[in-house]
Image 1 (spheres, helix red, strand yellow):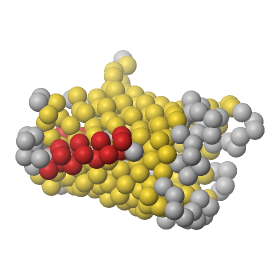
Image 2 (cartoon, one colour):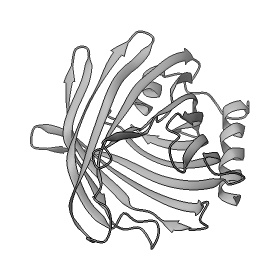
Image 3 (cartoon, one colour):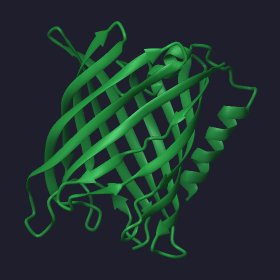
Length: 256
């Protein structure tokens, strides 16, 4: 709760305070929202679910650290990304580290934008009650097209169980993430939220159908560009106990 409040205060102070200079580079703002961009970035996110389907008077909160590090291997350009979630509150009162994910994407620049292919891995690093207890591996592919108004594209990750505890259900999922970001000028942009639309091959059904919007502000704190984001998502998948409405605040440090 304290972490979420601190990130909320920092986000809205940076978005609306005149004391922090605005970054004027719309190109950097687009790259901040492009998972295929070769920009080193470190971000802290907070996801607060204030309503669940089929569960009354409960909320949950998850902090998430993500690092994206571009590097070259021979003649190829790569992006390595690590995501480490930490559950601070949940309906079953569990808290602690959840499973980490890694991916490496080889990117290819084109006149219209960029596309990438690579692999994603699930690591069972979570604590008891917060881990799938499975090792997963699968392909990742995506593209982002540049337009005068901003960017649009699609990113797909697939995770399939390769090892793990047989007492737990296999993780075999495909995630599709639409990418839309419209530049508003003066460091502002708006577009789609994270929107991780998820298909579970074990259940043979979609298990997450979110629709959301995000508002971004790119500023410079001293010489460092930092993007602050506030977003809202509604999940239309309402079977079982699942997140219904979620607010997200993100602070992303860019090192272009």
